[in-house]
Structure formats: structure tokens, C-alpha cells
Image 1: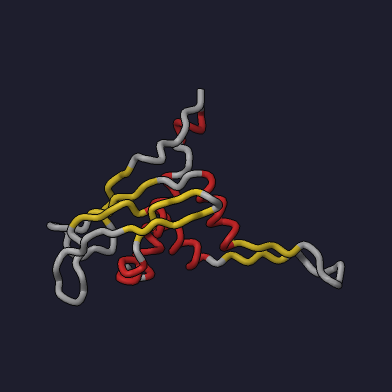
Image 2: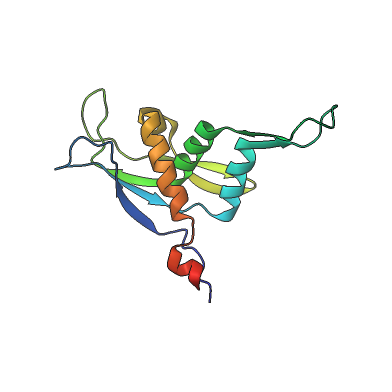
Amino acid sequence: MLTGINIYETKPYNSKLDPDKSNPTVFHVGLLDSHLRAYIEDQTTSFEFSSKNPKDPAKANINASKRNLLVVKFGLKGFDNFLDPRDRKPVKFDTVSASVSGKNYSAVADEIISMLPKALIDELSEVILSENSLSEDEEKN
């Protein structure tokens, strides 16, 4: 028997990039529902199957950086102990409402996204996307 994903569940995650192992930043990551996942994939992936020359191979474009940024924008649900680089004080997690395909979602505010280094965005995106996959035990069932 299959069990659906819980889009309201979050899991804590400590970045491998965090130099402070004794007092790390804790990121709270959630799942992306099917609508949001499809939107992100459609916004960042394109395929070309035909061209003027029938011998040309199919082409695929994947905008991985944009995909990772969108995944974090919608999949990051909070954090603890994340410091503002300007004053070294804790950042208040803030979201904005974003309409995607007629549904409203909470999205991380652009000011916060701008504070996240690309390597951290890539790492968090990988974690969020892996949470959307079935575990080995679930696949066996």
C-alpha cells in the first residue's frame, strides 16, 4: 500500500558547509507538492526534438542553477541560527506569497535567498529534492 507525501512535514538539516559544528545553523526543509515540482521542472527544462536537419540529435536544456534556486525558494521552510552578514545578528525567516499555476505558496523572501551562497543553495536543493523521492523500503513495497 502506498502512502502519500506529507507536504506539511519539515526535517532539520545541518549543512556540510557550516564551519561552526558546535553551534550550527539548522535549516528546516520541506517537500514540494506535485504541482510545484512540475512548475519548477517546466520552468527550467526544455527539449527540442526536431530541427531543419532530420539528422540533428534532440537537444535538452536544463537550467540547474535556476532550478536549485526555485527548489530552495519553495522548499526551505525556516532556519535557526542563521546570521546576517552585515551585523552578525540572527536573520528573521521571512516568506512572501507566490502564485504558481493558480495556487498560492509561501516562498522564501528574495532578501534571504540573496544571502545564501550558491554552494549552499545547491546543497539544500539536493536535500529537498531527495526528500521528495521514495525511500528504498517504500520502493520495495
